[in-house]
Image 1 (spheres, helix red, strand yellow):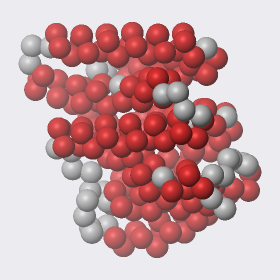
Image 2: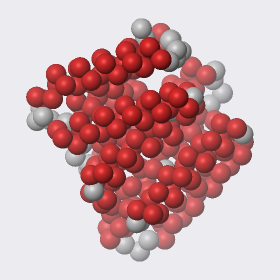
Image 3: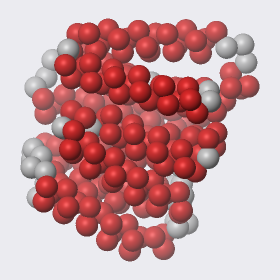
Image 4: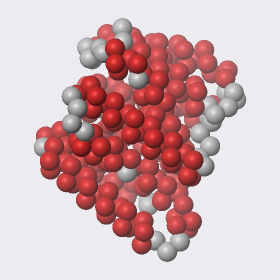
Length: 229
């Protein structure tokens, strides 16, 4: 997969997410077609090891359609549907983390960035809380740890590391942030733009220290302040 094809893939995911917001049934059908086509394409590869980076990246990108399809299948109200989304994301990232043996930085190395993470997380959280009145819910607050962990392992640990390995540092900052924008569009265009920039900051810090716990702390602080206070 070259950079042009990667860009097209991100555009397709964006279009599909917008379609899903406008027409749930059509969005589900298109997502199902994309997932099925991807699975068939990966199965057709004669030597998966030869395409290890691209294979991993495509597989990781398909997590978003799979999670969305699981959300649509659930018959719960909006709050519990969010729980379905993030529990699905949690189990998928845990599975692929073990399957592909990705080193996402479960280490104390880079802990010197902790004060920076605290300042950045609190600042971004209060900025977001100042401009956006997002839904506050005790049930969601109880899931914040799972939500933050799942997001950071997915966007930073799996996607960012894989993109950096195949496309370089600049793309490794942009791609996960674009995915964050796509993933949060259901909150509204302005919150999605805000979370895009939060992701850019988090990805940059993660790129410096390679410690997933630092990224997790930033996410936790932003989430607690924006969705709980």
